[in-house]
Length: 233
Image (cartoon, rainbow, N blue to C red; front, top):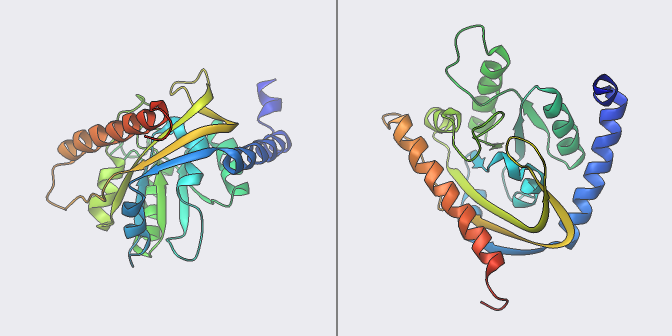
C-alpha cells in the first residue's frame, strides 16, 4: 500500500486534490494580519529575502507570500523524502517551485549530499534577488526549535530574514511529528510578521538560533492570541 501511495501517478493526483482544497481554504479563510508593513518593507527592497515559518504551518504558508511582480520570486525549500515529494508537487501546483534538500548545514561529508547542493542552490537564488521559504525546524524536528541552516544562509547571503507566526482556527492537526495544521474552509487565520532580522558574518550562530527561535514562537503565540480575542479588538 505504501508503494502504491508513493507512486508518481497517485502522488500527482493527491497533490491536485490538496491544491484545490488549499485554494478553497485560502479564498474563504478570514485573515487577521499584524506587522505586514515589515513584509512589505522587504518586498520593496532590491535584495533577495528569507522567510522562516514553522514546519507545521506549511499548508497555510503560501498565503503569506503571494507571487507577484512587486516582490521577490519565491521558492520553497523541501526535503527529498517521500513526504517531501507530495509537498513539492502540491506547492508547484500552487505556483511555488521548490529547491529540494535539507536546510541542515554542517553534516558529516558524504552524509547530506542533497542538503549541501540545496544550500548552494539557495545561496545562488537569494544572491540573485529571489526569495526562499524555509521551515527551520524541519524536516524531522524537534518541532518549533530552529536548526542552524537558516542563520547560516542569512550569514552567507546578507539577506533580510522575515520570521512569521501563523495560526488557523478551527483546523485539523495531523498525527505527524510536528502536528501539521490542516486548514478548513471558512475558518479564521492570522499572520504575524516580525521586523526583518539579519545575521552578520561575525555573529554567533547559536545565539542567533536561540533568539530567532524565541521570536518565532512569540509571533506564533501572538497569532493565536489574535484569533482568541473577542471580535472587534
